[in-house]
Amino acid sequence: MSKVTEIIALIFDFDDTLVPDSTTKLLAKHGIDTNKFWTVEAKALIGQGYDQAPAYLKLLLDNVGVEKPLGRLSNRGLRDFGATLDGDFHAGLPEFFDDIRAIVAEHAEIEVEFYIISGGLQAIVEGSGIVQKYFNGVYGCQLDEDENGQIRYIKRCVTFTEKTRYLFEINKGIPPKVSQTRPNTVNMFVAEADRRVPFKHMIYIGDGMTDMPCFSLVKKNKGHGFGVFDPSSQSKAKLALEEFMEPHRVTGMYQPDYAKDGDLGIFLRATVGSLCLEIESERRSIRRE
Ligand SMILES: [Mg+2]
Image (tube, rainbow, N blue to C red; front, side, top):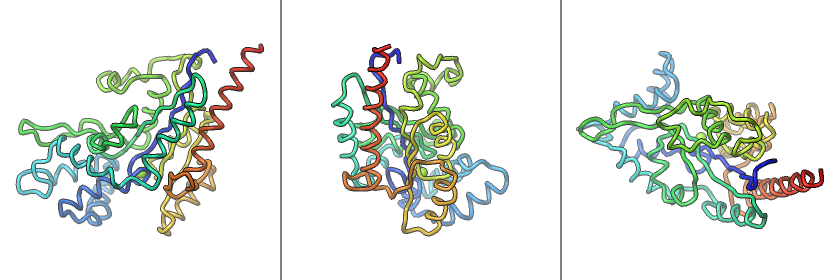
């Protein structure tokens, strides 16, 4: 360990992990039939060969314009909508983030950072005051506007494997602003010892199939993965068991309760605490050598 300050990163998926699905809420707010949107129209595009993310982004953009359900929606409009999500965060949030900071603050020269990697819309996520206050970086799908200032083009698309690109950016210490215009920076060689956030100091929290590559990458490199699921949905519980737990892709599956006495909240606090102790004991053993 050559670095003076070690960084622990908690990296979250957004929709259904921190809040109920934000795109669904946006569509419903504008009177769009969300069931038809996801299970009929998006499914049909995927059947034509569309990848999941561009399928829903195309459908969303098809609904933008004068006399269309989403009207002349802009990125500003998406951010304003994101600001309305602060009351929707799951139990125990945002106090959880303060608690994690307090746990880490008890240890010298260890810092904690929070990130979101989402297949949803980055402008919505960044509109949240909670996200602005606590998070060090947000990665998500981005849309560009036309000459009238309404969203019209897909600028960046975050698919399931694309999510791992951002784990590598965090790992190598590439700031989001740099990678935005120089996407190949992530492919530059950085020696293990020089990587800003080692994978073993990462904790990834997600709920869906799109999080699988991130769970695999973090776990393979001795990091931690926590799955979130809605126990009231039988299909989600089945998915949790068959795809997350049985193949040992995650350390555990919990309902999204981040409170001090919620199972997920308890295990995440404990994991951060034990990571801090591990870092300190590694430091001591290096000094003794
Ligand atoms: Mg999700």
